[in-house]
Image (cartoon, rainbow, N blue to C red; front, side):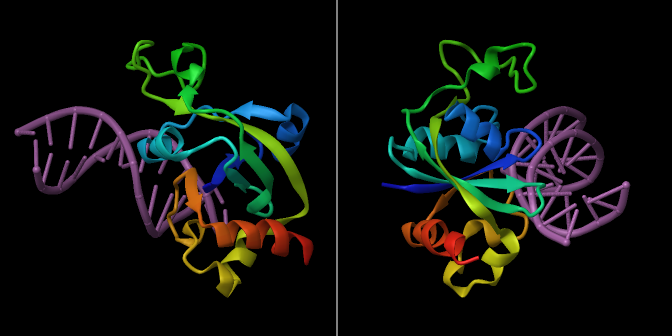
Length: 154
DNA sequence: GCCAACGTTGGC
DNA sequence: GCCAACGTTGGC
């Protein structure tokens, strides 16, 4: 079982939208490294930290889980979609996504500031400056620490 | 809104 | 294949 951190901009798709939807296809990822993680390494049941960038505060807002195998991201074929990719072919889609299911929303978000200050989270990818990757692997220890310890002790 | 860091593009 | 120019991300 693997663990991940997925980034979303708060005004684009928020944790409240997600809570309402219960389940969503994680579309619009147009970065090869992020795609490769979804395509090659994500499995049904994997744990996901739901992260908001450009939010106040920036940080982890809740937990989700992977609920589908990787499949083609349909937005790449939709000419009206912002993420339309004219180079991608139906027979051989460039971009893949997975579906994720809502698990919980934290009472208070675990802020990036807090995560950066906590020695237990040393080495976490999201702490690195210039870490723009929107799909990041997270260690089991870091996942459990954030979703079971930090979010309850605020 | 600013700007640093990063990814992608395209000329050569 | 190099690298400069450009566009985007994301913290502040």
